[in-house]
Image 1 (cartoon, each protein chain N blue to C red):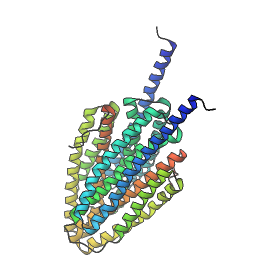
Image 2: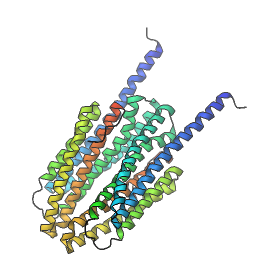
Image 3: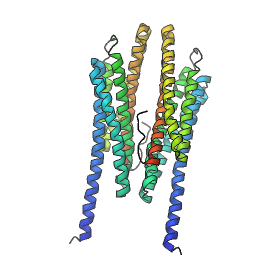
Image 4: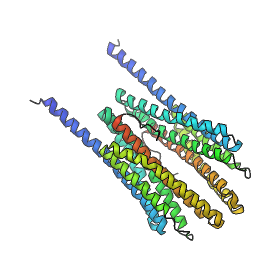
Length: 228
Length: 228
């Protein structure tokens, strides 16, 4: 027969789980906004859509505000709930994941800034590799957020492994742009901007990889062996 | 007359303060290593010192390992000490600051990587602005760590304001390098490398600024108003 104490304990337990679920959900929402900004910043770049680029930049303020809100939520849970083990790791890591997401948003915002500038310049040869690289990065961000919500270690590891492909894209795009400059130095400024765009995407991949490592740590209580 | 309970409580309090001091000290050591790597990576770049650049890269592994160690320390303190108010904020923020320092180390390591590659290429006009910018960034990292250890809000705010100077350095160096490419396209690859070095330094300044914001939050329990 359950005592009143058991019933109370169950109530507290359920309510803690709900709060933790809400925290991770907010983190996933924040991540979803960053992911959308990654996609939209590249879309704005390729289609010379200044309005969309400006929208990305204004949405980035919202992402920054969410980091603060999520951190305060996490810190309040640490203070009031005294979580242990996997719950403690989950809340602690959410402080770090919010930072990774904020950086991803920041890189998308940088791309949008360059998209605004580049919209006024003559276009160069179609750069099919940049949207492909962006798609790979966006996919990593999406999947690592799902891995976080589902606490799915295989999915996190899969994202972690895909970072190598992003690095290969980066090297290829970089070399391609270098060739363009040598062929026509008047395109230097434009090509350098696109090099930085590729670098921003590469960093976005890095941060998705960081999140994958943190998800692994939440689940297993130890770090991924970093040697790939 | 103090009871045995009072005495126990005092003992626990003292020992908590010691642990917190140790946590912040480890964070400051980690930051000191990153700061040194920033300085040494630029020194290696300017003096074409491949050995020093390699040293920076191997020290970066140590910095990465320290992030894990510090995070585990912080999470253990959260679990066992149930800290409140400024102590809770201090421990929570150390999880985020360790990440900022890890990124600073990462950027220094990127600079060292380029220094190794550039050591084999012919040098270009003396770039006095890059070491100056590096010095400004290194100073920001040093001072923000001191502000963290001392919980000194004025010092943190001072670092926060200096980021604008770093951004100005960046814009100046970028324009200078662009001119070099236009004058002599054979220097493209070299100049692009240096542009990325300047970008890495600018990001290091950003992370020092982030740490300043976190120190402010630890002390005051609220964010700096981000409008400069």
